[in-house]
Image (cartoon, rainbow over all chains, first blue to last red; front, top):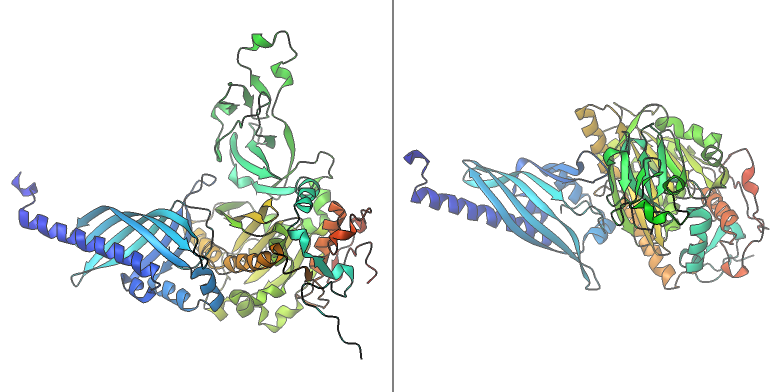
Length: 166
Length: 424
């Protein structure tokens, strides 16, 4: 029975891991808000994958709206033309609440609710999208990296379309 | 030497009346009301693909010209459309976007009147109360609307006197639609909506002319840049429909994978097909994946765009994933083209709404993909149906249906239906 009891040092380690993961999730939101895409992509493993998934009542299966590897995301953002930046480059603010952190050795699963607000050049702010970040993290060289971020989008009628990650 | 007349967006262009537009057609509330009646309610409108309601009693709600309809597949396999308004006191009967009728029945939540899959009333609560009046369930029902399908595409028409769908489309258009829509069973895998802050016709125009492709990084890199692409031509069909010749696209120019395997039936490798059905439906196929765009005009300055991606029914998981990927590269909400089209028409709308831009020019006449005759074909039909002159709202109604649209032959790259007042 004692085998299942988490010792105080183990608990401290787990809390430290949880805090580290929460900081990374909030950092991911801040990097996107600030258009610091290199820092954002650096949160991913080389083979990391980003996807946007949503479910409409009219269709039986969930839809994939975007699925890109880290390299593909990098390539797409680099290739964005000037007018695409005009479309996508509005001020963004993400409010993120980390709801679940489950650490399991060298992997961890987290789930976070988010709301993404846009502020246009006129200073008007509106909620652009809400949903969840369902993340799979993997630890290597003592650093957590995103192996998979799945954005479970609840908002399906997007006001402004963009190739940038949500 | 004759100097060209001034063209500044505010002065009436010195052009044939078919070659420019009075931009108030995009903003005038009276024009919008006329369009609602004569075009949005008066013509056949695409509402969904049959694969979206595959089984008996499957239903979904659709909106046509502001009216909400229940589209339901009956026990007999037929698709029917019914006004979603209880015959009793007008409440919405079905209140969820899609689903399956429980026991094949729709029951109004308010006073529990119920209807079957054909819209016939099956139950009136406490019918004895109507003993003294003429209300009987066998003479009661949800009002039906005309429904017809073509290659799995479901159309409805609110006008009971309108011609059949087949006549509305015409044989040439039906033949053009056959690849890929009529060869095998297709299935919708993608559906999204987005509100465009612009008049519906501005978005239609992005699909009716080929030279805004210069806006799109994808199109100018993989299509327009090729010499052979310049041979692509529009074919103007009667009733305002147009089709764009097949083209071959070089996806490799943008480091995209080529579309050479698992193609949609009838499509050529890296092929591209475009068909515009009047008033507001775009059929688009890029070898491996099909796309349907349709519009729900909400007001003169707001339009709901509904986008569908389609693959083959029975696709394997791997092939479907490929189709989804190809769809999303170009068209998805995070793809490359749609955002640019929306951005363009919203930029137009801003200046048309505030009156800065009074006239638009649709005067290109040339062989090839950059001709404006397709747009002029659209506006000839628009004028015939609304009775308005698109180049000059002040001059009132045409008073003449100008029915040049009943000719049989489609024409390539030339104006099919010049306005009756085009002295040009």
